[in-house]
Length: 252
Image (cartoon, rainbow, N blue to C red; front, side):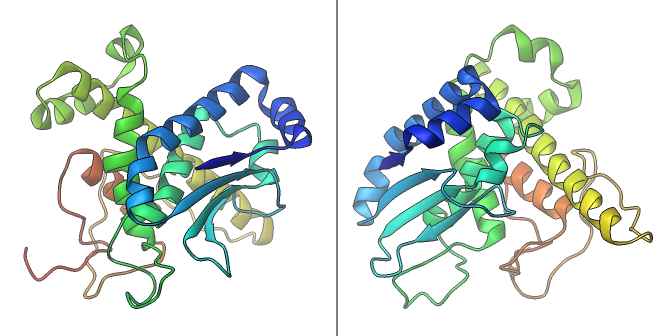
């Protein structure tokens, strides 16, 4: 796995995020490299992180080399590096989601016969929370800060699923990171909608206390509602089945 950062990219990353947060981002990416090197190798993949090499509206996205589909990429765009609203937690969420497109497994966006398999959006969220985000957060310092700040109802949900203190703290941390990241996307979408229309919809903010009531009759491979995405992240964190707001299963 390679982290591709030129001196100019490093300058702009540090300018936008500050040297401390830039270092933390690089440390997080290096942690992903170490954690998933074996899995990538077993699939015959290589993975390259490209920081600030393209201008695009999306903060980051997963891609593959056109001539060599086994060469996977996660591209962090300039828009992300320049957006001061994005926190390090948001970065972790987005990077885990994009890695989920490469490693998340079925259901895929494309036909299984193709070499360049890309996990669907819901599956990228589910795997990103269940595997990537939880593993990463277990390696953090999860001491007094989250004992004091985590909402009691979140801790209770984690205690119902996990027994070890470290797992409970990582679970609670992952739940809060997921909610914060989805709410960031919500406010971003609302801002865009208000910019183009005076009749912007007044939608409820996705929260951990709510859930998407709709159920699909076939699996949705593209993005669903933000509340459904948050439900998916929670299901992944709590080791529960994928929610029916995007995943169709004949087994209830």
